[in-house]
Length: 289
Image (tube, one colour):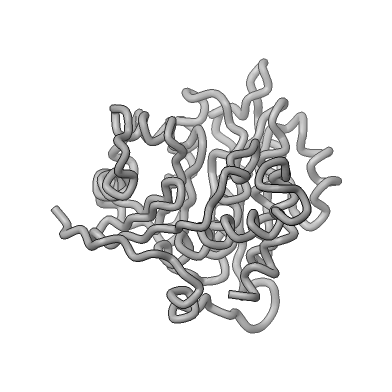
């Protein structure tokens, strides 16, 4: 079992000593993010994650979502390539094999899967397809229903050596742990990282499989709003895309997510701001660390 370190508090000073890569050249040097998710009733999750990835510095954005919403989403996010995927009768993205999805996954630098998905069986099949098509060095962000799918097949990432980050909330952590999380979220994040061989970001408690741990202490109640987790997952994907390694991306994303919320407090108060309002704060938060 890895020797767990005491968690380091994530501060601006810690991040300044751990600077993000600054890509040079065109958009290709900042990488391609593919977000796989959404449904007929939750197309906004993919939008939030995708725009967050661009705001964090990704060069190219691709969205793969339920075919009934793809056209509308392409208008809402004109910066992205949007591809429709087969869907079930109730509008969930179907697990049926898609050659086009294989192509997108194979050429992406980062794949974020989960935002807006809502059928666990279809998601499990979809996750397997993504993992089969992804290169061994393709970075992965698993969020929402993709985490439920992983809890059904916990060996999918074990010993694969894939750069992966899991972003559970407490409900998803319960599925991944197979029990209710305790009060010590540092320890719970550490257990999940060891079990699933991935970096884990659990409400600002970040753990690596080798036992290193960090804690972000700036988050406030306002972040507990619909769509906020989608923004965090996309932010993480964007940082990975520009060259950050998984623990660095997770720490920077947790801090940026929290401080972007703080920046909205003077306008909206501690609660009441919307997840989409976090998006415009991301670049300035990153720039002022």
